[in-house]
Length: 276
Image (cartoon, rainbow, N blue to C red; front, side, top):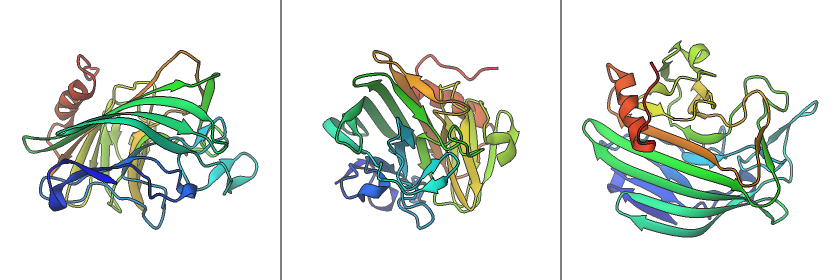
């Protein structure tokens, strides 16, 4: 079931509960977004990566369970299709104009709840564009939980996992506070990135300074702050892992993306500021 958070028709921002997603793609809720002029800013289930679902919370390795979908990278074996796909199950939802909040259970392939999540998503029109924010707070249901990525499992550069935004672009110009181009932006710990694609530009910001950006800018274009970079991340019982992402969907690239990012950080994390 899809719910309209903002707008209507081709310019709508929609939130889907993921109930129709095939089990091998790790079913989960996801967001579909377009610019105010109706230019698509997300892509769902593309042929090259059917498990890419617009904007979603997707983790490839939670104690061996894939909440990412598709194949799993196994050390000394490579990318393999395993029977290890989990599902995110919505427990409750509060919906208002332009926003929703949910409680979600992350259920592994054995039917056990491994993570509890509190999630809030907002969408609003602003001067010159549209702003999307997503905040997830994860906690371990029982014992400590660890998160991995293909990189932590032996595949260099593939440290994806977290809040991930798949665009419909095939090529894009990317930039961050650390430089221009994928080499500079992929792995950057800048609080913001700019993704300038066909028909729309995206400025993305996160307060997660310990989560470098995973970025692809050609072939397919996608990005997100990465949860597990150079080692497995441990979430101890009683602790909370915060994932946040704010994205401005603009008709054209801004002259000063850093100032846009400052406003975005204020939206997703009041009191935050872009480091000098």
